[in-house]
Image 1 (tube, one colour):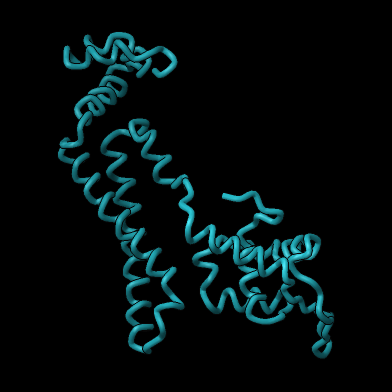
Image 2: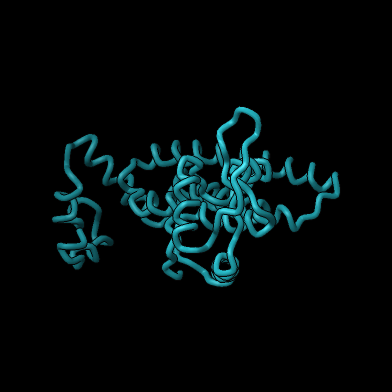
Length: 231
């Protein structure tokens, strides 16, 4: 991904909004919420004005006029510049066309799953599934409603993508939970035994790894070849 002068994802949303028409920051935030764009782009509305200021500093937007509505404070209306339009187009092309390595929180948790007992892992994964499946049902209902209104899909394809990701996660976690519960996950026998040794006999994981054959059987002789720094 390119290193951008203003890299905050909110800057991308601001440029996209101003590509339609000049607006003041409050109007931009209202439109983003109304269109649900804050469900697809990580948006911190508290930093909106500082993001607009940064975009102005780098010449991507410029002040068009200052308006006052009744007794309300003055508001500055901004418009996108030529360089801002080029920046938005390049940023959009990069997001759509260039895969980026993203670190999913669940992936990080799974990397250290043995830090939980198998039963606790199942409990937490089922807790996660409830939240995921609830969101899937909510998004599906919203899609059905928009389809019933003949609302063009081009305006909510990002929501379809979100749904596809959630469905894939749900399917995987459902399968993983069942494999842990039934001990069909490769290594689950070792996992359960390790926790049993720790909870019932107080034998730490570090101590277990010093003599894996003693604690887990001859089939775990391969663990003796693990370099110390990886243990």
